[in-house]
Amino acid sequence: MHDPVEPDARWQPYEESLVTTIARTVAIAAAVGAVVASRMGWGRWPLATLLALWPSFGGHWVEIVFLNHLRPSLPVARGVQVVARLAVWFVGGVGLGLGVWLTATRSGFPLPNRASWWVAGLAFIGIELVAHLALWIRRRPSFYDGRG
Image (cartoon, rainbow, N blue to C red; front, side):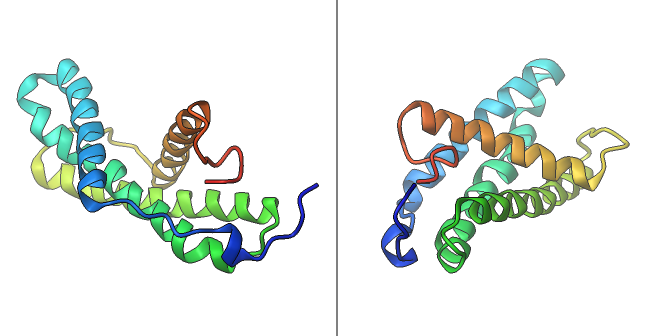
């Protein structure tokens, strides 16, 4: 059992330089774009990369909103933190999915005809769980250990 900790002492704001954020998220988007382009044609790589920037770069800011603005105002109880974070990921994923859809449809990029709004929310939760698993494996603060 953990001792109760004041939110100010436990939740330090997440800080990272914008250059580091851009480098990491663009690299992720370029890799995802390359995977898509390898299946759909290399001419689609730039647009596929642009679409992948929605969850990579946009997803970073969804996390920042939770970590630096919402989390400190919530009770420190693990269950509350988990439910709130999953809810933020879901709502953020829906918003990011809308951005992907708008960008893709305006650019002529083929998307599935029957994707529902909730699919984007669940997909973003899955993306975040995988990303946090990588952090946890590297022993960095993550969703799984309650430190990140």
